[in-house]
Image 1 (cartoon, rainbow, N blue to C red):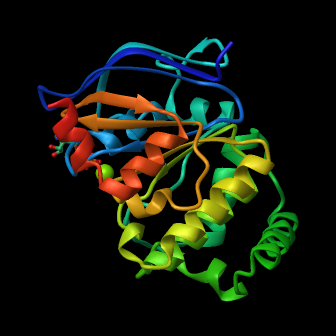
Image 2 (tube, rainbow, N blue to C red):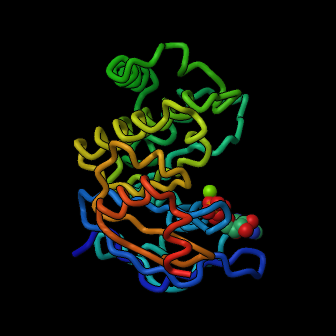
Length: 246
Ligand code: ADP
Ligand code: MG
């Protein structure tokens, strides 16, 4: 049984079909990469898998053999699906630490006393080399690319997802991002996570050892392959894939 099985998934928003029939199957422990130009539907696919209420979803998706589409967003988090919070939504009144504690309770379905959580958080931050002040910051408030990366790393390490959905939306703009993404994904994999990493920068592929690579265009997967496809895309850019598939 695959960890995630998607069959002919269709996603609509505001009467427009954004994802137009996607199928893919991801085994536990695998890392898949989804590439494609801006607007091809990559973020929408991840948001739909995480259960964002903004979208209308048809087709099939199962997670550990259970129907994913019937689960509410918090039930998906509880099942072990994490859409790392990386969108630049600033929530000044909410400290990073409080957000993480809530996410932790949602993931494991139990309350954790504040002090106990703070010491767990501290330990994780020390392990990751993140300075203590970071947890006191407002959620995403003025976060740089590097700080979003830290936030993502912390979420992965605290919440131990079975499936991490990582949208490398803008962190690719950061020259140093590629090795950090690779390191983060490998660390999560060692912790038992599978991952779908979405990007439109071939640079991100450097150092990642994906099991599958998919190229999206206009809401569909137009090409899939193994790590050799990643190498080819890195050398030639994914414009090549668009041209060769037409
Ligand atoms: P990508 O992440 O590949 O750049 P997106 O998934 O963000 O692409 O967007 C794909 C297309 O769907 C874009 O044209 C975008 O404007 C549209 N879209 C995404 N979300 C919504 C929404 N909630 N309502 C309307 N249109 C949307
Ligand atoms: Mg996107």
